[in-house]
Image (tube, one colour):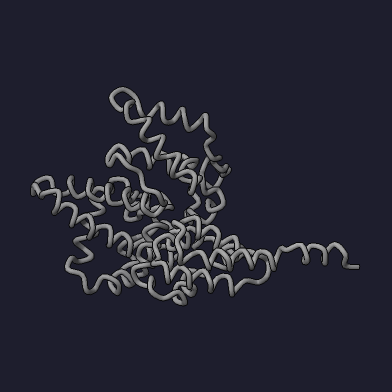
Length: 315
């Protein structure tokens, strides 16, 4: 089985229907593969758009190479560009466009007989996205699983707690979203579903996390436990959620969040790698420069020449 998340395969499916498959990691695209993919996607009447897309892609790729070289993300960028004639500069903005586009498409089909305007469909799509974000948060952060039964006590109890003050009911939202999944959810059993891609679940869980805890760096540390990402499965499970959260936070909360990570390191340098990943999710600004200096100082203290010489000269 070929996957970008080969490390998550074993824990991904509790039912183990594919237990005899061997997971193999998809490699990043090289320049030749990127050109072949673009040639295939921009054919015929779309060929005139290829140059404009390539120029925007090169600009985005300088700050975020993953968006250019990941097969999934490159395909997503192409689809967004075909619709908007522009591509997002950051991962969370790309997934925002993807989810909203799929939700609007879903609402257009769901409301076929009602002939709702695109504005009303967009409003309904926002409600659907909010519901999916809450559901992803429950599955990812509380249950720590991908497959879920929406009617189960473990899901229903938490969802009712979250959704109690909303204008639409849980039953209405469930009926609306599960009648036709349109790329957001996949049916894997009689009453069992999963988000169609793990990254969708992670993005939506991060979106909800920021909505609830996005003003409190200490609460984010408690919920995400970013320092565990290098040493435990639990931390690895939240790694991508933490990256998405880092890209969405307000500047002052982001800086405080990263400072807490750097202060909580165990001297292995893992905190520096985490904060560097988080900085790559954002545009540089005046508020992040002191954080970058703090990061450099931390790296020098942990991995500096004096520590190297001390290790080499020790009896």
